[in-house]
Image 1: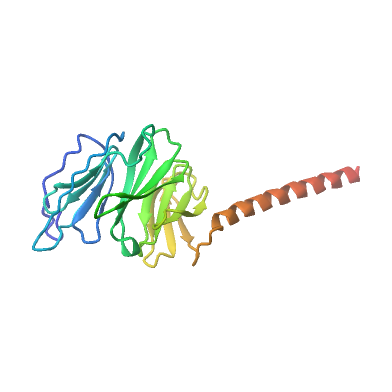
Image 2: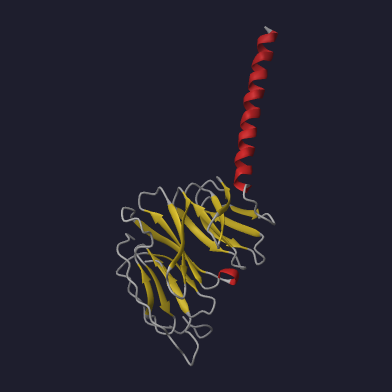
Length: 250
């Protein structure tokens, strides 16, 4: 719909009764991304839209089976992707999509979950050539929600194991993982304006505010794991000495 008139921008687009999981406007507002599930061969339909030398706004729509980029002028499909993962034996479902912004402007980020629920990928596409730039496994559980920071440097995702993950938009490297941040999977996720805080919400009726570090080091995930190992080791040592103490009292 157009704002503020609330007039319909273009006729409804039929996705053959597929469930739409997510959508996003590009920074110019001339494209929309759609995610309509089971992925088959790649189909590309790419043409250029000009309006007195300026591109129309776009929206990306993610349904279960396909990612589509539509023009907000008339709803026509600019690009369609049906198999983002090159592994022919891996059946997947689209889950979420975000246009890049700031430092990542000119790219599209798509979340793809494997149908057997053992992997979750993020696919980075060029918004100009539609070629895959990076594809990376970022989680061993399906991703439930997805967000990009205002400066375009970071991506956040919630997974079905109730964890929160942060990765960079350049390489899709996971910078931080916080396990069990909620008691149920995250359903809403967002960054603050200066990309220093991530807010997550869950169906467990809780909201969690996470302060991000000023700089992510290569070992930041390792530090969390190391802390867990140290605490576990201390627990074992304390239990041993407590048992020795009890034996000495006898």
